[in-house]
Length: 242
Image 1 (cartoon, rainbow, N blue to C red):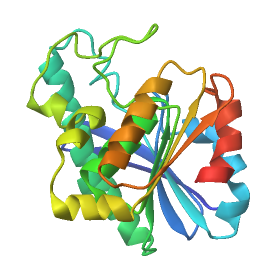
Image 2: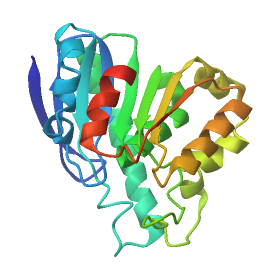
Image 3: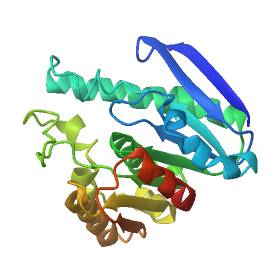
Image 4: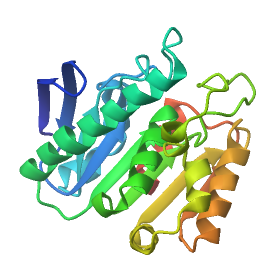
């Protein structure tokens, strides 16, 4: 299997960023790691192995990016407004540095946003915000409202609200989305949400699903037995939904 390591300095983030590429052809899969994960997490959790037959067959090419979540959403010493601004810089890095690299290396017309746990938030958020750039999103065990206090998970903005937080919270902005072009692009997208029936964010997934249906955006919501929020579960999900 083709495996490539890339590293370069990102002026948008003010530091070096790393990523891994697996495969030689096929639909391009942009993979975001979990909250505690790095660019090598998808490989460490054997999710690359779980998709190995599709990668080897040239059906998928996987791009695993690094995270700045501990500099953004989980940077407790920063003001919440600075946390969301750091996240916006990360989105700029993805849009203007990673996606162009993917397009240069592979001209396949399908780009998939994918992630597990907090990576699922990143995948859904960027795909819903920029649907003209993605043809599919596959999100496992995600939360789509970072302002919620649920179970042991807290509001990541400590009660602070501003315009940037609103427009990076799918469960908030989707209800008020009326742009015909953006809605049309979302209706063409293949959207797959997967969540355990004992996951604390099951209701949040069901709410997002309801918002999507209300906007006429077809999608699939799969509810797995149990919490289904570990590498073992994601290894079973990936071949089915990515």
